[in-house]
Length: 366
Image 1 (cartoon, rainbow, N blue to C red):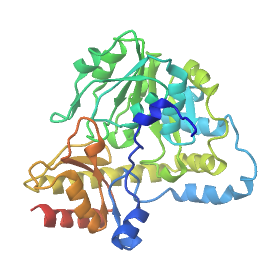
Image 2: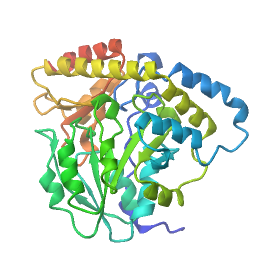
Image 3: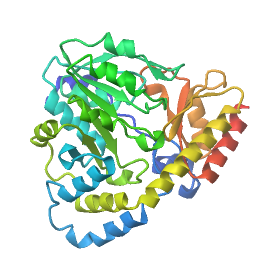
Image 4: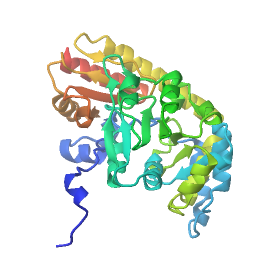
């Protein structure tokens, strides 16, 4: 038998949100009746300009894409308010950026710090490259980072510290003064995950002007409506971009993807409307769930919200299954370190679907 790497023996497959196809086949529910609240997507679809750009790019798909992404980087840099030399783009969403970052940073025995419960992909990727994962703490009850828990874990082996803001799955923000405390305590790279920054209406781009150990990571999968095209980008110093570019896959960003991103970023009205509607639906879900007496929901600055089920009579797998039977997909958060089996995460949908979810939820838990 072929021998694979020993580390694979301790690996579990990454747990994504449930798919519509899976629910259709298992529960016999029509696709149009499924309400998908598990994957933090834009439910209103892509920009019309992006759709047209993809159609217009069809005659170019027999050619390799531009490897240096000059036009794409210019568009992203303009959107982010930075120089194009500070941009690196990945063709598997932000996940490719994490992978290239791990390859660029980690030697065996190096450490990274994460603050569970948070996005699990950081350690999922970095452990593959022999990083030792060190755990700080996110205070779930207060929905904030325990900054001291991060500072206490920094050693001379620390290569990267991951700060998720808004934090996934809790939705809480990390104040910039706390980020600065961590930046100034170490030479390690501070990776600030801003995948959902548009919903938060604040960002940390200004830190790049003063600090050279900051790496901001973002995606086109959320507000910008291109989750199916898998485009992410990092913003950091030109020196880090240059080093990462030496080992980054050359042609990972396809021609249709590049065209769609540029078109989306030119559609300011679409971006503003997607952001406005997303925030409005998030607040509707918060107020509606908060009115259910035996559920606790946490305030969020993203497009998802965390719900505590301890007083509901269900654990997360039980309630998630009951909702699936009604065609509603939520995220069972049992797999998130730092949470027990009594939390689910919901993300925004269109208003009629959000109303339907609240109706079903009340039927089950009231």
